[in-house]
Length: 223
View 1 (cartoon, rainbow, N blue to C red):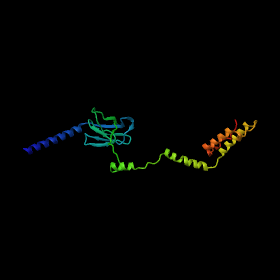
View 2: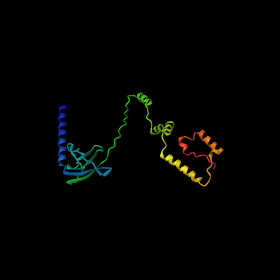
View 3: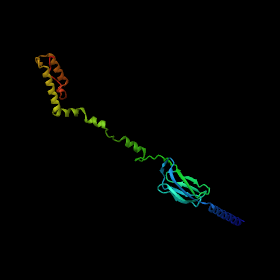
View 4: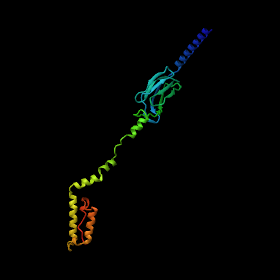
């Protein structure tokens, strides 16, 4: 009984396969031609797209570097377009007795969100915490500038340098100005002015006769 059932099943399967093949042969041939673009922009061409005929033994075709393709199919064949970075698209060849079928295929880009991967050079978080706490941070530009302009070092360097031409010129201008101001009057003697003596003593006490301010100090006068 089982053997008879197996024979009947085999005969039915063979007959169905032969009928399907006969139906496939009866479908008229169509010249399928087209070009493949990016669905987001018709100006972007998708090259080298795989085109699989799912209805005819998974026959494989491919578009060229300009996205163009042209090959023979049957009416009602199901074609699958696949390319890396794009979603697959399935197209069925329409029936109608036409000898050619032209189509512009638009593939949608596929966005894949990958999981976040964090790479650490430390085996454990404790090692990272230890190295982070003991890490020596380099000085930034502001800190370096502060060290270079340290007051004590700046004062020593300033006092050790000779006077430049600009300082001498400023002192000469001030002397010429005082001479012009007192050209038509008697030049007062600062040694006889007690107020000038007080000012001089105060300047000496305050250290105003340092190098930086000595050129601005004038002889005491009665004016």
